[in-house]
Length: 392
Image 1: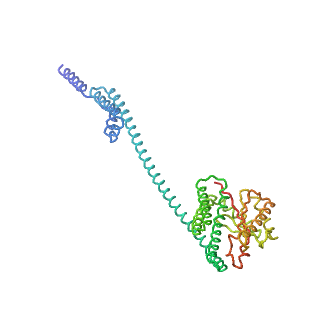
Image 2 (image 1 turned 45 degrees about the vertical axis):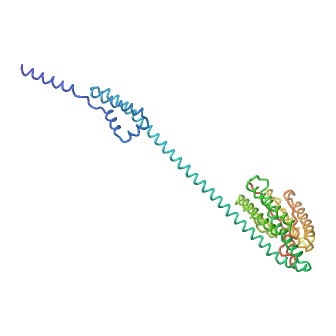
Image 3 (image 1 turned 30 degrees about the vertical axis):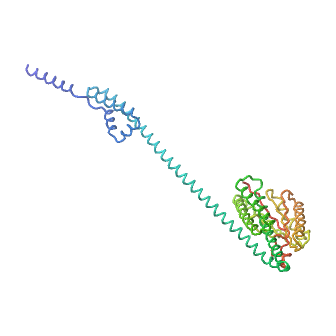
């Protein structure tokens, strides 16, 4: 009997002790406690204080339920707490990613601004260098014109020894007219190449060139030949920049078109050379002081006309020069009659008249100085300037 009651007492004692022990920790609570001690828990608190506080409350509730031996409630509270903590962490990561994105965008904007400033500086530097190049080119052109006319000035001064001052003025005026002609011979091709395109920058260069040409004319009237030279130099610099810009816009297509045209015209026997203003074709045969082309010149021009008629975007500038030493008026009259005949021959070959522009330059652009025995023979010539209209 005593043994029986001892066994019953020991079993009750064990059951009592077991009932007083806390419930075992479930997996959800373990995961929540692990997550709570992880380094990113601090980020979650910054992302959403409400979610973080609610997750902390669920953790505390889970632990209390465990102490109260309510394992199911402990797991439920821990699972909810884990969801809240992970949600807060996700928001933290989104905020951090947004911050990094904003910083990256700020760095990108700063880099783009630096690039823009660098491009602006490079463009300004390129423009200054380009302007300097064409100003030097203009000075070189005028210097060649002065050298070419120096001998002519000496001869004219000797021809009028009775009035040295008048002789010098006549020579200076002739030189001024010649360099103005050099500018005019560049403006017409630039206008033709530009066509009707409305490009503000190029129109500005063309207007600048026209302004300098007008000022040079005024200076010539006032007998201020130094100012004529200065204005023409500035005008040539502007028009050469314009021609270079147009040729750059035309690119490889323009070069190929000019190469093909030069090869075709070269087969006719005419002399072809490329200048900044376009292809310059010198007709063979000498006009010999008359308004009529010789047979060779007509045959060559007819062949050239048939080639030009197939080019709708081409503009033809007819330039006629005279070597007649009888004065500018007589030279221009002969050159005008000759350029009109050239236009007629081209039209008969199929070239549209509206694509032809005739300009008689008379004696104002001699190949060698007037007074030289070779002047009349060398300077009397007909040239076609062929200009392709550039598409802008």
